[in-house]
Length: 390
Figure 1 (spheres, rainbow, N blue to C red):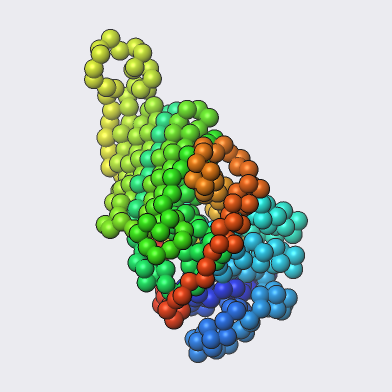
Figure 2 (cartoon, rainbow, N blue to C red):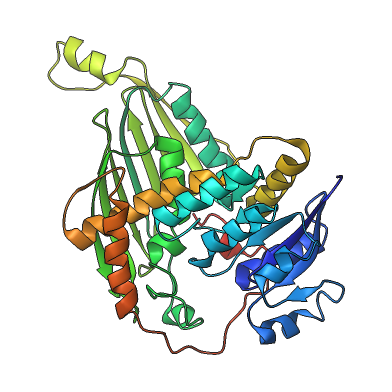
């Protein structure tokens, strides 16, 4: 096989973007061969732009058509794991849009199905392709940070208007989406948090629901987390602040990193802080340090980078930058945040998945379908709203 034939299931904003990029030949050795959407209207809208691409209303028909070696799943969240399981059983490779699912128990079934199939399983964590984040991860792994102490991420520039939430009946509902800013927007940042700094041992969280919008899910969140070594993390996000902030600060006993405005600022201590603290005869002052500002690309290839990486993994056997099974890490943190707020307690990881689903189901049962405008679709290009916003 010298190319991958791929179908896309779910042709909303993100699915359309992937379709245009692949159909336009922007990803080497990846060929668009089928499209699927449950909306007949949406399929008719696509015909002029993709005249030679077979269209399907049912994902199972696409999966069993013989037209595809792999699929991209870009449907509403709840369908991600169930469609992936169907695709794996049919012997197809799978690239899932984020999040990998809404609750961890079904995602564990998805991961088992992927393992049983022997097929490539990826997730669209496109911000992992950003060199500025990869540097932070490698810096910590190299030991230059020293013993990790603290991560503080203020990521409040996910601003959304009421019109955005009114653009689809599934948006901002527990029945349609399973959550708000946590699952839809800043799942990228939560993935990067654990990818760079590791998984915490416990979480205490506070969420506000419909604080800034007419929605039933969270649009403002504050999280405090603790690690086995005593390190802590604070994570703040919202879709209701303008102008928002994107500032990531990571501290250790040997260095401090600040990622903000597309720049990396670095302080490296000449003597580890713990050593200085107990050896210094002075009551004030601090360890000497060197300061630098690093010239690192703040953008990266984004979605197309993940598409190419997925293709290379299938054809060449190269390791994935964003393996699908790692999607459960960010989802575990998100479910822990939800569970902490819903129970007004600190939650220890791994979470009680049954208790989380029980409380989620209560919210699903109370959820109401939103009245919406006509369905709104993006132009499908790799627009600026899908890049890292500094």
